[in-house]
Length: 224
Image 1 (cartoon, rainbow, N blue to C red):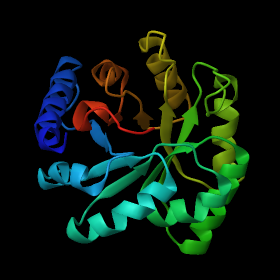
Image 2 (tube, rainbow, N blue to C red):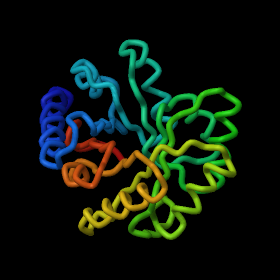
Image 3 (cartoon, helix red, strand yellow):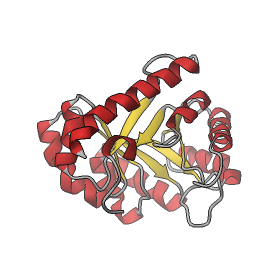
Image 4 (cartoon, rainbow, N blue to C red):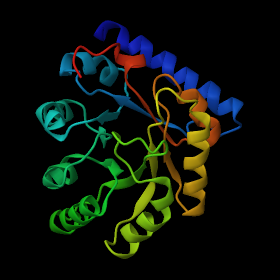
């Protein structure tokens, strides 16, 4: 698995560049987040050795266990939290992550704002939108996006960079990407975190600035 990760990384990066060109977007305008959740340091190191520095994790505790050590060896890592965040983990998340993609309710916004003030460290922030309105999935409902982004700015003093979504696995993704793009434009947001291993190339014509790719780089996961 880890032996193939470096080659897989090259394949994904080339696919991103092809999609950028096809969409008439500037080369390098899309950031690849290599999703390393559930993988241990030896699996991640080939990708780091290849020079990649942007990684995504789902759980604060898992990231705390492996990234401080890796960062000592590989400076310049940019770490993204792409999984659900509980308010009792806000302090750890603000301390560890450079970007948080999953702001999705007032309690989290308030906790993040409190920790930014306390720590003097401000991760870049994305609001997660539940574009498919799935009951089991985190994220702000489409009808509440504008009000929530405004509340983050006005009530909590948060600088929101963009929006994130995870479309339903059993639906075409393009309508969800288009919807997220519409919301971002309406709210003056430059960032769009959308597209994963199966559909990242499709997200790029809709303005994705960050694509979150795990299995296409690291292979199938041995645990959830």
